[in-house]
Length: 350
Image (cartoon, rainbow, N blue to C red; front, top):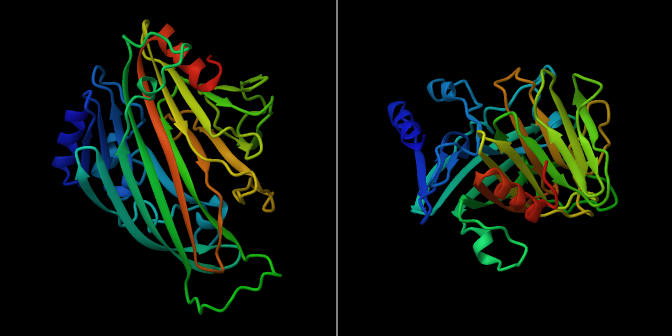
């Protein structure tokens, strides 16, 4: 699959980085949007990510797929001057410049200005994303609970994203600590995956997620004493959220590839229950705490699911800096072994 993708990238003049794991896996990073576009293990051709090949041929198609970074609150930064939903082109695809530093590391940088709708204030954000390949975590932990991994192939990476925020027309006047911020801005990580799998979200206790929006009143899910199982299937779109108090900082996506094989994606990230998580549902602009989010498009926008998390926010009235680090692990192999890995990482499987 990667050779086909690389041929397409070269054909349409895209800049990309091709990172290779010592075990043979590959990670393709696209400069447009600074997205991790494809990740495969050495033994397989099935990518961890959903992607849209047609997006490579059209400059106005932002959604090529993969693993990307946006900022939130979504309803503050993704509106045009008329109040209609619009993805800011300054952010995505943006003006990223990508450099491959080594066979296992790449870095992307860009600067853009965005408008915070409620306050009508402009902010400048400098973004840097550093991708680094990671060894198999199963080989780094000699626990007796680990399954036999002889049939498992692996690929993984860490992404470190740094945001420096400066209010436009900032005059460096000391902030009045007695007044609240005009608004917030935070890093927002979004991973697009093929449909048909099950989101596995460990939680502290049994937690019913907040519905951000839904086309159906009855979203199929299983609430466990320690987590949530959420199948990504059906004709209806929805988005659910779990707050920072309940989020463990880890979630996964388990998907059957064929009669014998399955894949598992696990993401690890930091959660700060005292941080400001300002992304909010429609009609609840004062809502705080939305940390993990899960979206399914119901087959209406390309047929994919999104596993998302937010980082604590910065106030937009003063200069600030935020760093987010996460790890992504991808396993492919015999279904029983993959299910056991899901149990080890997440505490349960579907």
